[in-house]
Image (cartoon, rainbow, N blue to C red):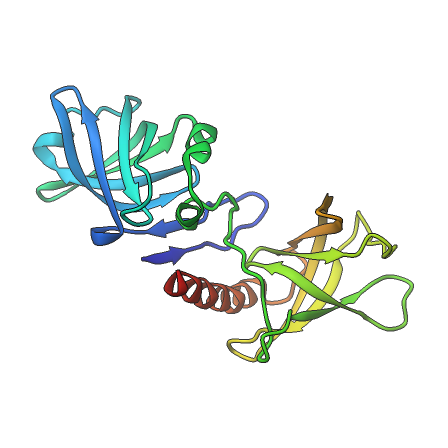
Length: 246
């Protein structure tokens, strides 16, 4: 199983995808002539891609609605029944690669058990809870306006496109809502220094804590693409460890 991600700017959104196949997943497609087994190529929270013999793909027309029956996450996990719409077909010798968009993602989410969320994470980029070399929450320096020194705060989660912090209810720390904030920290896997500019996205109260989320501003972050790739390597490494433990 491989995890795929793309750096995106405000005008170029992408979706977190998982490349899966073989023993990782089993997929059957409901065709007018009957169900046929297909090879799953990749999936995300919004759609996926699969391939099947060319003579079977003749029954799939762009814009057609089909039913997918997917087994993913291990033998103990329930089968998933997904309504999907065919968006494109690419001929590759004797096989055809088909791209689909899920017609009703919310109904799909309602079926998922915890291990299956590894395949269907709804964020545009997968996030992990970052830790330092000693297994403690990774701390970042937030350079806030009108403060002489940066504020050290533990990161709640991190991805190549954003991060968040969880604050105690009594913490009255305020973040500017309309201007980038400088955030710096050491990326554990490479030991490189991240120097980001982030924009406030949301403030949410969850389980007695104030969750504050930020999106990386690629326009004002220096070497944004290179830094995103460094963070992504760490995120994928942590996610692979999570899967191995599971």
